[in-house]
Amino acid sequence: MRTPLPRPLAELPVRRLTLGDLIACADLCEDRRWPRDEHRWGLLLTAGTGYGMDDPEGKGLMAACVVTSYGPQLAAIGMLLVAERYARQGVARHLMRHVIDEAAGTPLSLYATPAGQPLYEQLGFAVVGRVERVNGFFRPTDDRASAVTARPATAEDLQAMVRLDTAVFGSDRTHVLARLPGYADHLRVAEDDGKLVGYAATWPSAHTHVVGPLIARDTATAQALVSSLAGATDLPLRADIDARHTEMLDWFKKCGLQAGSETTVMAYGTSDLPGDWTRRYAPLTVATG
Ligand SMILES: CC(C)(COP(=O)(O)OP(=O)(O)OC[C@H]1O[C@@H](n2cnc3c(N)ncnc32)[C@H](O)[C@@H]1OP(=O)(O)O)[C@@H](O)C(=O)NCCC(=O)NCCS
Image 1 (cartoon, helix red, strand yellow):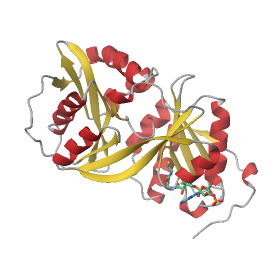
Image 2 (cartoon, rainbow, N blue to C red):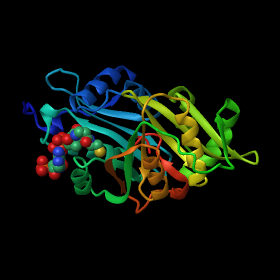
Image 3 (cartoon, rainbow, N blue to C red):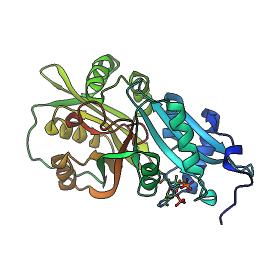
């Protein structure tokens, strides 16, 4: 049942979220039938900045979203959620306007669900791409022997990973990648002739291992990384793959994964995302880019 707002939106404050809000954020996900993903909220609320609005009736949060900053070039918005009982009263629009104001001209990006896209369009975001979700149990195909070897990452790989990532992502995201070994269940690097040519991770979400980030020189390298990661888990895999990587998507399907929902990539204040999409196969999470 819908709960009317007790006061005009302008009188309901937006505040910064902290790790103390993690359970309330997970409750908001559950309210919208999203996985609670407390693990993911832990990353987002420490590497990024959470914004929220308290439920005027004192029942946790009415709305939340997270902004991960990557310097003056880009900030990624994710996890925009409004409790169902407060839907369609302008709460998301109000929170997004606040976030856009706070960004003070920094270009913004996000992955929009069909429910979110009309709002983002009204706010001035434009479509710049598309990702296709694949999920299911991975069955290896023995197509080809790759020249690339994938192996578990070690602490010594972090610097090279950050260097590669900065070129591919287009901004330095050391503050996020430094948290990756603690966040991911499995982390792999791909090497060719001793040179790091890709890296990828899987992290847990609702009895699934999510592949991301997936950064690779080419599709064969991306496949070697995913095969290595899949060998380390008995859980189904999920990945949000840039729809331009059709060969990779076809391969996932050959390996037993099914096509899932599509998400639109949108940007504000820039006509395209920085970096090199040809080497960027999957984001770390759709909330962080
Ligand atoms: C998407 C979501 C955040 C919108 O929250 P909200 O507070 O209900 O949105 P608002 O009332 O501010 O809506 C602003 C406008 O967005 C559009 N909109 C909102 N919800 C929509 C929906 N479910 N379907 C289509 N358009 C929608 C409408 O144009 C709306 O204006 P109107 O009500 O005057 O027609 C909310 O539905 C939600 O939490 N959904 C689940 C999580 C999700 O998909 N988040 C988006 C991630 S990208």
